[in-house]
Length: 234
Image 1 (cartoon, helix red, strand yellow):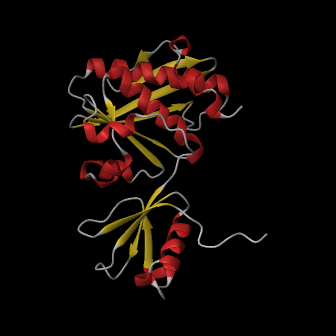
Image 2 (cartoon, rainbow, N blue to C red; image 1 turned 135 degrees about the horizontal axis):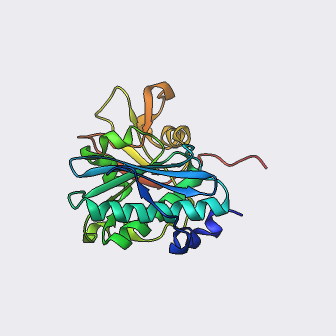
């Protein structure tokens, strides 16, 4: 069964396993013969959340996923209740196949805490998230308090397949515009720019970049969704 078919069950409190805190930042819970480990790395009110089952970060099996995610949510609630100074929590999904579950996790945790999800684009541009971006994969962040107006759209459920956001530009000529493309792979986004934008005509792909983080001080033009630059052969 696909993860998207049982998302609502991932957060059912009846699946929460009894939690024990080894210290202020590390909790664990038994899951049959296995152990769920939940760790918070906090500095300056910003806590990075990491969780695993027997130190394996791939959550597998429908029953495991239900118990793991429900228990993680409960641990986050207990952690925040103990540490009033924490105002931001971040975590990563290493694979796209898990990104939708983690997106749903962020939304559910923030709703239960009275917090809100930080929009992906803002998080990519905000210097305070620079370290978490270095972890790679798909990064999620929630912040204390209700969502301001400009962040309301990020609170809505993710209905589509999780998509990357790419910023495509020149490695050498910073006077050229940077193009933002949603979806596709990095090289596909580069090809879309190479084939459709006159200022990049004749560029070699080695002279370009595709990044998740927008550059500073350069014009950024949003091209919207990735569109293949040629039709697949019939």
